[in-house]
Structures are given as C-alpha cells and as structure tokens.
Amino acid sequence: MKKDLLSLLDLEKEDFEVLFNRAIDLKKRYGSGIMDSILKGKTLGLIFDKKSTRTRVAFETAMIQLGGHPVYMSTQDTQISRAEPAKDTARVLSRYIDCLAMRTFDHELVKEFAASSTIPVINALTDSYHPCQILSDIMTIIEHKNGYENVRIAWVGDGNNVANSWVNAASVLGLDLILACPDSYGVDPKIVEAASVNDISTIRFTNDPKEAVKDADVVYTDVWASMGDEEEQAARMKAFQGYQVNKELLAHAKPDVMVMHCLPAHRGEEISEDVLEEKDGVFWDQAENKRHMHKAILECLILNNQK
Ligand code: CP
Ligand code: NVA
Image 1 (cartoon, rainbow, N blue to C red):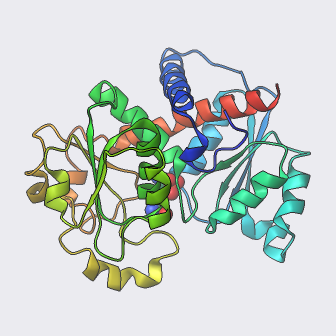
Image 2 (spheres, rainbow, N blue to C red):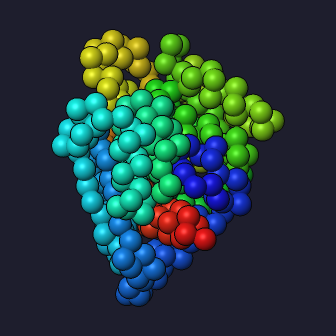
C-alpha cells in the first residue's frame, strides 16, 4: 500500500480487498467486545477546513478504540490560516504525530501535505474526492449484497467529489457503474479519462435518471450543492429537477434496490423524505461503517509506514 490515501487511484485492487476484509473483521471484533489496542501510543492529527460530523467522529473514535489518540485542529486555529506554507506545517506535524487526516477545499493542498510529510496523509474529503466514504460504502454493499461483483450501481445527481471517487473505485475494481448527471454537472472529464486507462468498459454516463436506475441493485445520491457550492444553490435546484431519488424513480429499479446516501441529506431535494425514512434504510449502516473502515485504513497506513 502507498504511504498516503489521497484518492482511490492510490489503491490497487488487492489493497481494497485488504481494507474490506480488515474493516469487516474489526467490526466483528468490536461487536464481540474485543478491545484492540494495535495503535496504542500513536496519534492521529485531523486538520479540517470544512464542516464534518461523521468523518471527524468516525476517525476520532476509530483511533481511540484502537488504543491511540486523535488531535483535532480546525484550520482557522492553526498557522495555516496565517499563511504558513503547507510544506513547513507538514514537516513540523510529521515530528509530532503518526498520521494526518485532512478535509479541505483544493485537492492540491492535500497533495502538498503528502509530498512534504514523512507520515501518511489521508484525504478526509476535498472538492475533488472523498475516498474513505466510498471504501466504507462498498463495505456496506458487500455486507448487504454478499459482494460487489455483479452489483449494478446507479449514481443519480451531481458529478461531485463522491461521484468522482465512485468512478475511481469502478475503474480499479471493475464495478458496474452508471451515472446520471445533468449537463454541466457531470464528472470531471479528466477523471473519466483517468478511469478509461484501466480499460474498464462498465462505467456509463447518461442524462436520464430513469435509464440509470433501470435494473440497478444500488441507487446512490448526494446533495446537489456540496460544501463550497452554496452560492449556486438556487441555480442547482433548477438544473437538478427530475433528479430526485423518490418512490417514482425507484419503481424503475430492481424491486430489492438498496438506496444509499453518504449524508448529510437534504430531504425534499436529492432524496424524498419517505425514501430516507424507509424502514431498514441502509444509510445508518453506511455511517457506522465509516468508523470500522477508518480503523482499517489507520491501522494499515500507520503500521506500513513504520516498516
Ligand atoms: N459523509 C460524510 O463525510 O459526512 P460528514 O460531512 O458529516 O463527515
Ligand atoms: N458532496 C458533499 C459530501 C459531504 C459528505 C460535500 O462535499 O459537501
């Protein structure tokens, strides 16, 4: 496994399998009351420049439950906000902590941190990617659908950071993925081009949500205006009309379709209230699995970096 996890293209297929297996194992161990302490004495730094509930708490609790400690830093409270260069901050933090999880706007910043750090840097969401989210989401698919092979996944909505990470994952794992996004809100062509290098012909694109969900086993959506896009909210509400994941749209999918959302959700926009409140909704398993997957990621990256 590489030192850093900045996008899912940093992982080989075997790395994905290691993480899925370990996260599922750690979840079972935790459920049986086994307290692992494999990261005893280790410290995870978190630098967050955007809001977070799940990712932050999942990383902090993951670290604590493995015997280590988290140190949370809002960017505004650090010297980064007073223009200390990333390369200096990265070198200093490498002398204090064993791993750094970063949530920020520009993906280039996490790349700069990774290049100047001797410790692993994990992307906890940038404008471009949300790799840890998709790792725990595929873990959830494995649990509910007995694997990810032969599972048809339909993305309906914005071609955003979460969608980009789905395209990355699909290109490495050969997922059957179709994305329905409105014109001008599709996945970045550079990300599509990078995916085609792996010669995966199972990634498809459409403007028609009904076509996307036809025969889908999983329908995935996310907010229409991501963090940083708030000023475009009104224009986006117009552009995304017809893209809501609701009962009417889901009637075109398989009867046992599983609806997924990384959360937070905007009820009545990208997803209807009744779909989100459906009994047996998998959204809460997705949220829980972030903690188990974050444990697997932390363990692999921190221990690998010490070899
Ligand atoms: N899904 C997710 O990343 O949620 P948060 O923004 O709450 O971390
Ligand atoms: N696309 C969303 C994901 C939040 C977890 C955002 O970036 O705001």
